[in-house]
Structure formats: C-alpha cells, structure tokens
Length: 594
Image 1 (cartoon, one colour):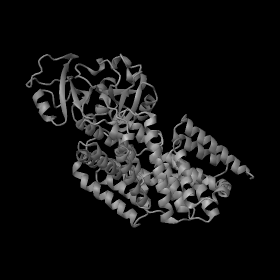
Image 2 (cartoon, helix red, strand yellow; image 1 turned 180 degrees about the vertical axis):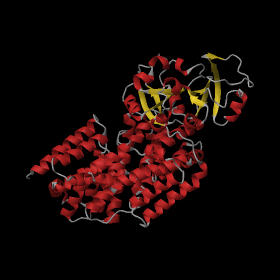
Image 3 (cartoon, one colour; image 1 turned 30 degrees about the vertical axis):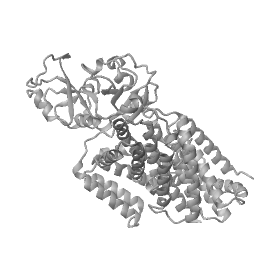
Image 4 (cartoon, helix red, strand yellow; image 1 turned 90 degrees about the vertical axis):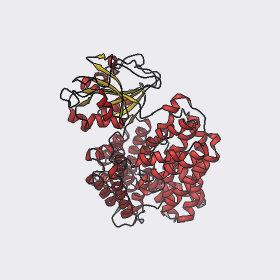
C-alpha cells in the first residue's frame, strides 16, 4: 500500500487533530478551526471548500434548532411539559420509569438533548423526593432516554445531519426528517423495556444531595432599593403583597444593620437591602425588568455598566466542591469580582435559613451559588477545582400567552421540512426567524441560546471529511478494510461499523466520529457493491446511541453528582444496553435498506 504525499499530510493533520480532541488541551471548536486552517495552508483544500461548513445544511439547522428550542422554553412550553411528566410519573418506581423515558425521548426528538436533561433534572429529583425513591433509580433512565430521543428525527443530533450531508455530497438521495424514526422508535421502546426489566442494575443511592440538589426555587439573593425607586415610601406589606407569587422576603437591612422590628407597615427607604428567596427566573427578571430594584451584589461589586451586563452577563449555578479553597471563607473575603470577574448574586444551602448580608456568609461544601458574569470569566472559573460544575440557567421570564404561537411555528417548520415544501435548512431558518419576529423569544436570547462551540465544531469538522475523500485517504482505508469485510455477512459488517463508532465516540464527539468514519464507509460501499445508507446509518447511530461510559454523552455528566453515580454504574448498565442497541440497529438497517 503506497501512501501519497497528500495522504501523508492529511493523516498527519488528522492525527494531530485527534490528539488535541482527546487531550482536551484546547476547546473542540478551536481544534476544528485549526484543522481547517491546516488543510488550507497545506493546499489540501481550497479556501472556499474549507469554509463551506459554515454555510452547510447541518450547521444552519443546528443553529436554527437552538433558536426554536429557545422559543419553546421562553414561552414556558418545555417546563409545562416537564411538569406534566412529573405529575404523571406517580409514586411507583416502575411507573415513573415507564412514563419518564418515552416522554423525555419525545421531547429530545425536537430539541437539544442536553437542554432536555437539564430541564428534567430538577423535576426528576422532585419526583424522587416526593415519592421517597432514590434519585439514582430515575436519573440514569431519564438521561439515557434523552439521548435515545435524538435518534427519532434527523435534526436532533449533529451526527445525523452530518451523515446526511456526506451522503448528499457522495451523490446519494438526501435524507428526510424521519429517515431514522423507525429505528429510533424501536430503540426508545427497547431502552424503556431494558430499564424496566433491568432495574436491578441501577444503584440505590440517595442522601440529602440526591433529593435537593439543583432545586430551583429556594435561592437567597439581595435586592437593593434604588435611590430613585418607586418603592420608596411604600410599606413592607405592599412589597410582600406585590411579589407574593414571585419571591419570599426573609430579612431587611438598613445601613448594613438588620432592622429589629420588621412590621408590615414599616416604609422602605432608598438604600435598603431586602434578603429574599427567589427562583433563577425571578432573579433574572428582577435583574432586568423590575424598576427601582437592583441586585445588591451587582451594584456593590459589578462594573456599573448595566447595558453591558444585560448583553453579556449570564447566570450560572455553581456547586462548592468538597476540597474547594472557598470553604471556610466568606463571599466577601474571596472577592470573586477581582479574582474571577464574577459576582455572587444568590446562595442556596440545604439546611437552615440565612440572615444578614450574603457577603458575610461563610461558605460550606455543597453550597449552591448563583454567579453572574461574562461567559469567558465563567468558563475560566469552571476549569478550577473549586466547583463541581457550572450549569447555565435558562432564567428569563416566560411569555405563556405566546405558547400557541410557538407551537404553531414548530409544527409549520416540521411540516415544511418533512414534506419538502422548503429545503430543510430554509424551513428551520424560517422557523427560527418566526420565533423572534412573533416575540416568542428575544433576539438577544436567540443568539445566546445558540451553542457557538457546537456550530463552529460542525463547520470545522466538515472539511476533514472532504479532505479525507479528496486526498483518496478514505478510499485507501476502505480498500484495506474491504479485503477483510468481503467475507463478512451484511449483519456482521453493519454491527462492526456500529461498534467502531460506539467506541470512538467515547473519546470524540458524535459529529467528529461521524465525519471520520462515514467517508470510509462510503468508499467501502462502492468497493463491495453494497448500498451506502445502512452503513452510514449504523455509524451515525453508533456515534449517538452508545452508553458505555458517562463521558460519551454530556447529559450523563449532568446527573453524575446528583445521582451519586460511579463510573462502574454506567458500565454495568451501558455495556449490555449498547450491545442490544447495536444488534437492533444492524438488523433493522439491513432489513430496511439492503
């Protein structure tokens, strides 16, 4: 086997890219951009080809889906559905799994599975707490269902969009919105039945953290009465009556001292600080929309640029790690704004009520803090050992009156894409624009909801697939493998392709795995005279529906600590489930398309 100079250069770029992906020394989107630049500078691709990923169908659809999801979230649709699922789950473990898994999967079919997992997390914890079940018995089935739900439609996983794009570039017919649905529906049923029958594989761990972790309705924050506030001269009773359904007043400070007699008829003054308990949505609304009331921490420690804060600052929840250097120190002594460029605007603690200024609270292990800051500062802070995780809040006021409009836009988008009235990327782009134009979500939130890292990574890995085909590397590897694959039955060949993708996706993203393996599969299909679609489907499914380890899917990382899971827990459940999924996918792909 002779390797040309171009193939050698491509393999060197590919090896360096894989090493950076695996080592995680650089962010995946930056690695993808560096790979794109390397392909252009070495002459393997023309600049137009290297940048074609940014205008590709997968990148556009992924960005549009994020905006559609923002509209559903902003109008309260996703939370209503989640709450209804929680009520239907009941108090029986068997019933809870039977309800949670299919319902969560259906939600993930038209949204991002990570957003669905984050939204369902507090709901599942509340179901576990109210019914006395161990949270670890429900969280893993819910997370697995969110990932399985991405196999129901073409738009729910970047891997499927990339697979369809590579097939189209190869001259194959384009995939429609529901090409994967028959297999996906079977996988959702299979996963649900497996978890119902295999409940003995799930650990039974609970504890206080398992019950109340990430509870979203009991954060403490401080509100400052502005010097020009319309609340000056109004009584505490009026304040409590006005915010009765939105927050709970806990304490009242004036000139830094706690007022001893906090009667209902006592009048507010400029500069007063009220300690309240509020949800993240309420904190965000107070931060942006309530005249005369300011977040005390932002005024005291922030940069004073309210417009910049509205445009750039985000709210995240951060859990103080067991060995954090913050333990035993007050919020003021840590000086978050100078050290990290973020402001602590809220705090939650499992036991007891808080009184006095938040800045004087001594931090403990397991404290949940609400931080406000620019994305770069929050990302840098998340890389330290002081916090277990940083999770963004989708914390904005909902517009429930626009919920029917948001549902109508989603339905019209899906119909236009499924019936090919419009090209899929145009249909979803139009749906995203409609969400903004009708006021279902703001333009600022729409941009903020787009995960730029995923968008850039998709745009950046597409040129790798092009270069693999253009340099003949895919054909070379396919010829090498075809000599061994010629004697295999179609089922075994498809199962091997699924397995290769399932293993590779544990260290790479589903998108990168698909881009690397699909060109090889396409070349093998040509060499063996087999249809390409079933081979590509098995690779894409292996990249998306493999549950061997907790690091294969980001949703599993969200439930790792709340469920008190160990690495071995995922192996015990994931290995047999992935084997069943692989066999099912290979069998159905063969029967449907061979």
